[in-house]
Length: 104
Image (cartoon, rainbow, N blue to C red; front, top):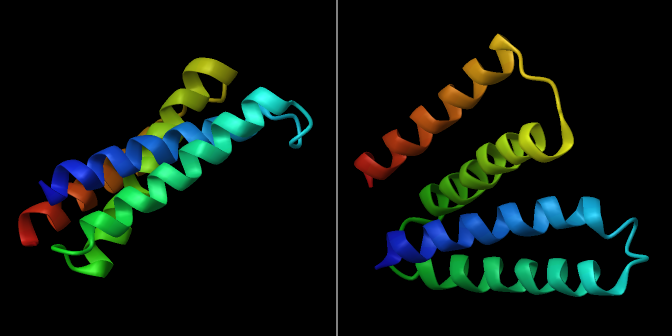
């Protein structure tokens, strides 16, 4: 269950990171409220997950999910560059996340 909570926390981290782009510097009320809600939900879920997971592992996986998802959505939504180097680095992060999952 802790890994499910951690995965959900990571997905909400992606949501708030992408949401920051839509807040226009926190000048748009609805995107700002949704982004803030995603931030709170993400941290609460992380807090619940670390009850049963090592903190270092949980934090690394949480940020890794957020990083990978945000980069992928940045490519899809904002036409950010797709290069072999970026994709290779993303693959390294995913490999690290999987390694931490199996080592925990």
